[in-house]
Amino acid sequence: MDYGRALEFGISVVPVAANLEETRALVSAADAAGLDLVGIQDHPYQRRFLDTMTLIGHLLAQTGQIRIFPDVANLPLRPPPMLAKEAATLDLLSGGRFELGLGAGAFWDAIEAMGGPRRSPGEAVEALEEAIQLIRRAWAGEEGVRLEGKHYRASGYRAGPPPAHSVEIWVGAYKPRMLRLIGRVADGWLPSLGRASIEEIGSLHQTIDQAARGAGRDPAAIRRLLNFGGVIGQPAPDEGGLGGSIDDWVERLAGWATEFAIDTFIFWPALTDPSQVQLWGELIAARVKTEVEQRRARVN
Image 1: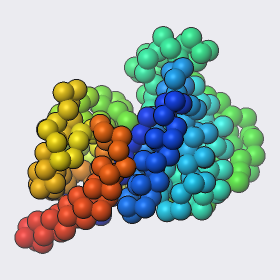
Image 2: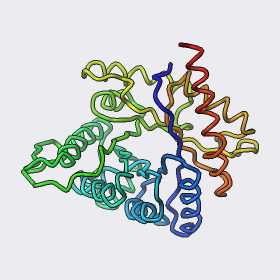
Image 3: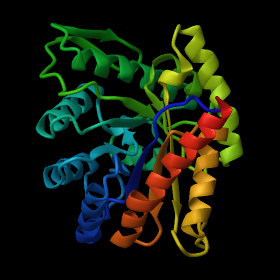
Image 4: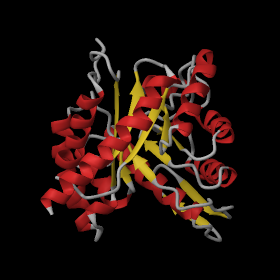
């Protein structure tokens, strides 16, 4: 399975307050290496973590080319109208370098402890779909944004300013109802290796595609991202993830693109060394793109 989309490459970082200098160095290396994206986890209830949206603003100000996104934003603790406002502001301030990864929520005890709602799986799907409607209406600059939903409501507030570019919404999810939501209304699917195997992820595309076609959408228009960890040039770490030589990485990722429809690769370095990011951006990404082009040409 291959939708033929252009490939993109990024890294993921963890917003540990004590590791801020390390995070800055990794993100700076990603920007210098010509990578496309940086994802940052969003767990507001984690006492060791900085606020993800504030950190994104800080890092956008320190970089020049790379796009940054929450991987993924914690919807139960971030009301959609304010999330839309934050996203548009970050996008404007950075000249169009913000994207929105969005999650329905997890770790419900911790969310509830911060005053957030505890939602059943079905309620989480409903709330996420309502939130996407509100956010999109806000970005469109409607004169009076209105929604009478079960979980969110807006009674005619004036949204704005709009973002600098068409911000994409990428949803992290695995269950059928959420995958169907992605097919209907999201711009991308953002699973993580480890939560599911690459073979399982490959099989789940079908649920998204069926929902997309039912909504009159082209499945190829939906980005297929993947979070995964590992170490370049060493054996795979004990806690899981990828390992091996650069040749091993190129072969594996080219297969993921052409056999399992992944078009956007988000690497979480197990070794927080900028040289890993440099290898990822300057060697592996370029070689994977070339290999995938060659494989696609042979098929066509």
